[in-house]
Amino acid sequence: MSDTSLQAETRTAFGSAESRRLRRTGSVPDTVYGRESEAQSVAVNARELYAVLHTEAGLNAVINLAVDGSELTTLAREIQRHPLRGDITHLDFVRISLTEKVAAEVGIDFDGEPVGVRDDGGIVETIRATVNIEALPTDIPSSIALDISELTIGDVLRVSDLPAIDGVEYTDDPEAGLVTVSVPAAVISEEVEEELLDGEEGEEGAEPGEEGAEGAGEGAEESGGE
Image 1 (cartoon, rainbow, N blue to C red):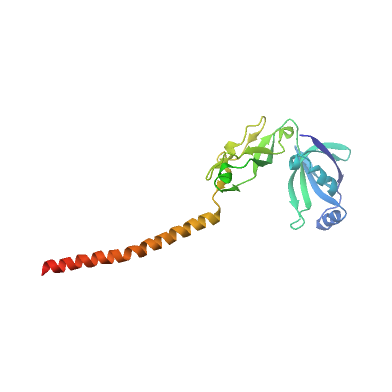
Image 2: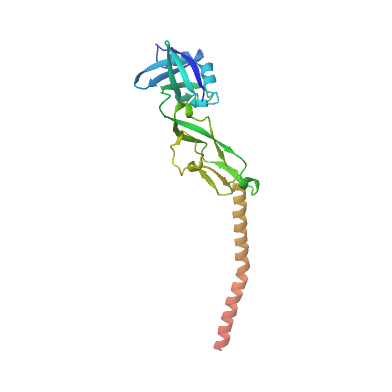
């Protein structure tokens, strides 16, 4: 994973009004902390931040944050966004060491067309599209590929089915489901409706025979009694 650089300015004014002012001028208020250092309030350019977080590494990019003449090795975490526009409104820069493992969330790429989709008309249902890992900052993969081409209807791939990657440890429950192939809801509804109709027809068809049998039995008893 390649790292990127970002310039930050120390903040000396605080509060909601100051944060709104920064955002109006194209900056994002942030906090830098970690590695037993005192937390620092900073601001970065919104466009530069967007560029840094949209490289191949995504949200797990190693960011060399320049603050007051010092360069800090960080990861972006606790990202807050505007509920409508999706713009980043605040985030934390966590100081890290390139020689110590960190926690990260990585996206999963589901590769291939499942047999159950191609041959049986099933649909792919994603249970979750990310997985939590631990790795050195420079070993965090940009994404993890998982082959789903052999899935048939009802099959489930789990965290334990993810490929082994050198230096990467999966920290989620190995039995946690990731993806499955299921029968479309419309098909299930049609099958249930057909079963109900078949059942109703069977009940209706059995009534005359049952009544006739009972009637015959009663007639035989009366005849025998006379």
